[in-house]
Amino acid sequence: MLLIKGGLLHDAVNREPYVADILVQDGKIIEIGKNLNAEGAKTVDASGLYVYPGFVDAHSHLGLDGYGIGYEGSDYNEMNDIISPHLRAIDGFKPMQPHLKHAALAGVTTVNTGPGSANVLGGTFIAVKTVGRRADDMIVKMETAMKCAFGENPKRCYREKGDSSRMTTAAKLREALFKAREYLAKKEAAEKDPSKAPAFDMKMEALIPVLRGEMPLKAHAHATEDIFTALRIAKEFDVKITLEHVTDGHLIKEELAMENVPLAIGPSLATASKFELTNRTFDTPGILAKAGCRVSIITDAPVIPQEYLPLCAALAVKSGMDPFEALKAITINPAIHSGIADKVGSLEVGKDADIVLMDGDCFDVKSVAKQVYILGKLVE
Image (cartoon, rainbow, N blue to C red; front, side, top):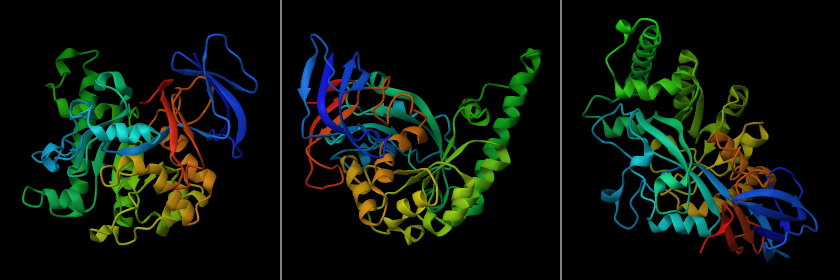
């Protein structure tokens, strides 16, 4: 058992922080209150410290990228097949790369990581803890979303291999979803008549959870036109969707508030390296949150090093975002976005004991994570 006593809790549920104790057993928070005692528990004096839930990134490529070895060591983009829904992030995840530990020591305890945006369909994301030696043992949720991409990246990567316009990208996604819908219909018909079963198709099998509403499309979309195309296709096929990057989001805040889909904003701490990033600004998260959207702030690591997730939120606060909304944007909102809010994202009884003890406000660049716990174990 672990007892963290007397810290100032920023629980991502209540707007105002409060002093309380946290009791942990078997990796879970079992009680939050004042003057808690537990015989035999390891007691940590958190007096004077700020206590946060472990930070969560809704959109990362951590563990699939190459650390210190360049693109040759990365595994987040398949460059030979523009339609690759059957790929799974877990099969490219490298748990012992040093930047996972960097993230954990900075308080980023869970990331939703997976394929990049080279492909129209890139495969499934996974939610993982940032410490461990074996990917299978780090999983929070095996398949959180199906990555798809719009805009300039598929065009650039496949310009000589069948995709040189936004129209083509949209058509290829529609074609895959149409085929998957037909495949699913034949499979369902075969439940009563096995002779109607289609030939096994791994790509189509991978898209069935999307069509059944069990997994959202995770749509890379920076520009206004790409955002609206992603939403249009999701409605056509009646599938769930989350919008990723949303660089132009502040320009269409009313429409996005009306659509009411989860938004992952970023990476904003980088230059406008291509046309669709022209409107990049740290104003976007605050504007969208104020408009009533559910906003997550993301690093898109390695674009921004994973450990700087709180810094990105701090820069959003500097640009006008409400501090409590910024805290939610790196805790409970990305947990909801990733379908793991039952386990992480806030300090609540029953959730994983992912807890960060800092010597000051997490939005103050001078503050340091003094202790980080993942599933109740100290990260060292």
